[in-house]
Image (cartoon, rainbow, N blue to C red; front, side, top):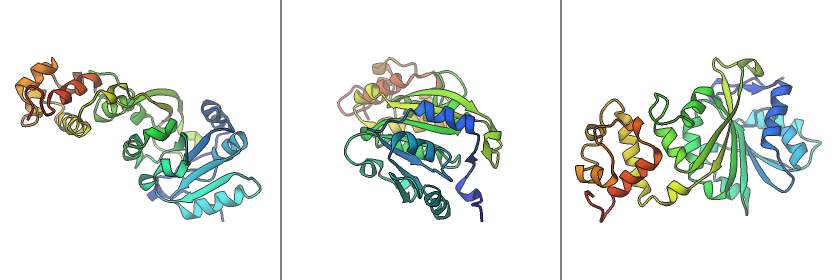
Length: 264
C-alpha cells in the first residue's frame, strides 16, 4: 500500500522532477562531503542526492516513511536512515568528525523551532538548504523597518547569512499545501555573534522587544534596559524594535552586561 502523507507530521511530498533537479543542483553535493537530510519522506530528493554524493544520512520521524524509503533505496549503497525527531537530534554527533551540510523539506509546523535548534549546532555545519513556507523565508531575510522583520530575522542574522533562492508552487507537492514554498540557503556568518558578550542577555532582550513590537523600546524593555544602557549603546529608546539592526541589538545587549554603564 502506498505511504500516505500524515497531517500530524506536516507531510507534503515533493514530486515535480524539474523542481527536484533544480534543488539538487542548488545544493551541489560532492562525494567528499557529509550530507544530512531532515525529513526525507519518500526520497524525492534523497535518491538524487545519494547518486551525486555517494553517501547520505537522513533523519525521519515517520517509521512507515522510513521503511518505504529503505525499500526504495535497497539497491543503493551509502544511505543511513535514522528514525527520530530532528528537534531532538545532535547533528554534530550524527555527522561525525568535520563539518556537515544539512538539507531538507522542513514541515511547516516545526520549521521555526528547528531553525533555532540548528543555530546551536553551527560549529559543525558548513551550510543548510531548506524548503520552507515562503512567509517564513520572507521573515528570515527581512530588512529592518518592515512588518516581516522580527525575532527570527535578528537571531538568524547574528549567526548566518540567509539567501532566498527560488519559490516552489503548491503543485510540486502531494498533497499540495495551501501556501507557496521557497528554497533558501543559510551559511554560518558569526561575526556579530562573536562580539556578543552575553548571548542569554541578547536573547532575552530580543524576545521581549518583539513581544511588544508596537511599543517603543523604552516601554517594551522596561525593567530590562536602563536609560544609561540605551545611551551607552547609542540607541534612541523612543524607537520601535523593528527599527534596530541586528548589530544594534548586540550593542544594546553588551551595554547591559556586567561592568557596562547602565547594567542591571
